[in-house]
Amino acid sequence: MIRQIRSNDPIYRKISSAANEEVGRIAQGSKFGQEIMTCAFSPDGSLFAWSVGSSTVSVHSVSELLPILSSAATSSGATAASLLQNWAQTQSAAVLSARSQEANNGKIDLDNGQAVTAIAFGERGDGVSRRASINSYQRFNTKGNLVLAVGLAGGDIKVWDMATGRIALLLQDHSDAISSLEFSRDGSFILVSAAKDKSVNLWDLPDDGNMFHSLIPERGWVQPVRQVAWSPNGQHIVTVGDGKTALLWELETFTVVKSLQGHLNDVTGCRFSADGKLLYTSSLDTRVICWNIQTGQIVGRYEHMTPPPSAIFAAGTNDHEVIGLDVKQSRLATICNDGFLRVWDISSEEVKDPIARVEISPDARSLAFAPDERSIAIGCQGGFLQFYSFPE
Image (cartoon, rainbow, N blue to C red; front, top):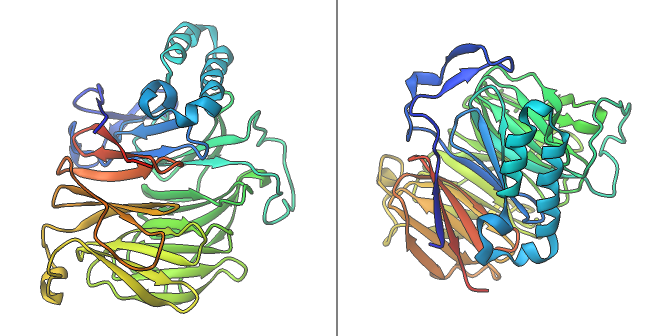
């Protein structure tokens, strides 16, 4: 481990409106250390954002946060530092001094007025919106190409312009906490969101944030969706959640084209391979399954118990539940309830032993690979982050 940082938020967190009026407390009176962490690197690896479930998202310059891993800093670190300084300069006089000091320290905090449950960076590309922006309104007018979407406990989504540190859009349709957010990788600024209200929505940010479609299976949603993921070419989305099935959606028709069944317990995470040909899903059944998305067949299993458990044991509480996963280029990383981070080389379809198995905090709940796959951030339920680096 190269660094650990801890939140300094108060023990009891309050949920407040944008006007700072108290409207309640986090569900079930959560105390410090009982939150589910969410964290993400920006696509170019220059920024890192995280939240411990309070209303605040902290955004760091990676070159300041993790100087030992500043390969990205040589090319984009200066951009990140400049961006944070620009934030300070765009604020009102009342907060200018505080923001300037934060920017000088390579960190800025964004207050969202409600408990944060999901975050995702999005980057504008050279192409236009997938929907060719049927109507492109001027209210979504960012000064840069990078935004941060923040999902909230009440179901709202705030989209921050990272060039100014201001809210560019407020997206409203969900009625319960946002569980997952992800932008299409084609640079179109299309966002998919999932929430505990059993809804999955598609938003077109250039079209004034229009919620243009909801993904609904033929028989409707039976269980909430935990995570969503885009294919690299933007043509497919996968949804997983409380259930043993992963659904592969075709975006041209908004229909399920594959129902992937092979897990023995709830599915906790999903990620496509870099070329989009393979899909990785994690589950409480102690394993990660690799799927060929063209055939829907299982091509590999990454076990977290040796020997693999019986079906009855895997389907229940087993102390080896795989909490989450991330995939970058040639590596697959997982966090497991046995208290270990595992990293596999997935440059070939042959399943081998992990190239790394590292003991971590037993309450790890989220992870994120840096874009260069040299480092990984792990968010823990105790309200702190752990960072690990790996050899090239």
